[in-house]
Image (cartoon, rainbow, N blue to C red; front, side, top):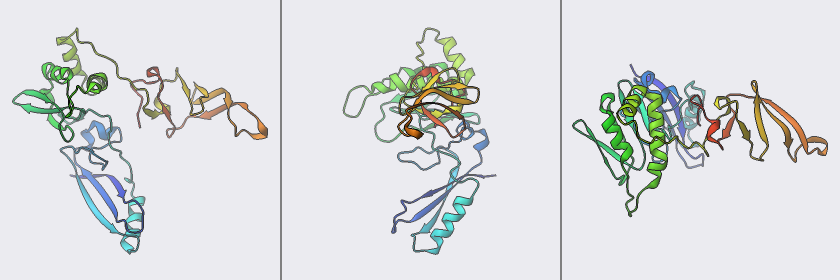
Length: 271
């Protein structure tokens, strides 16, 4: 039976813009790795991909002059599923039941018999849902060895530098048995760790042995469930002060920009 998993509101809020509510239903949510992380490929985003499952019910709320606009806005905001899920950016493999949803950028993958064939990206994004057993060591290596080229010529170097390391990392987390089979068959394959710098993550899930900087360059460290700066500098301190010790309880809503890969662990949740 289909289950409501997310409610979203769309419309720029201007006087003539129409309000649109989107209700996402899916009967595969409980067996989807993206959903377990609070994400869904059915959430509307610019140039987003859609997975094989789920459906969206669109409700037109009209413009601000209509009664329907305000009623739909209140009902959507009050729903327990409002804005519950986000689009899974930077997710290149998703496990859904006994299948995998492949979405690495800069490449198009198609299934021919039992063989995964890789092609240059062309127009549009890559999306392919296949049974898990299709990800044999040979097929995984085809994905990792490919060197895509742009429409105007020249290799897309970000694929080998960024996409492949992230794809293999996500594979190792979601399908460890497939990753182990790959590394066993190709023990000399050079696996490069992903580069997490520049991404934002929930501070509470980051490495508590590492140090972190805020936007002003103040250096923080964990002390139990608190984040502490021993010499906090700010122009907004009371009494014309310039330096103080700052201690804050770490909450689940706090985010931080990753500046060192050592700040990331297997438990780190990115936003």
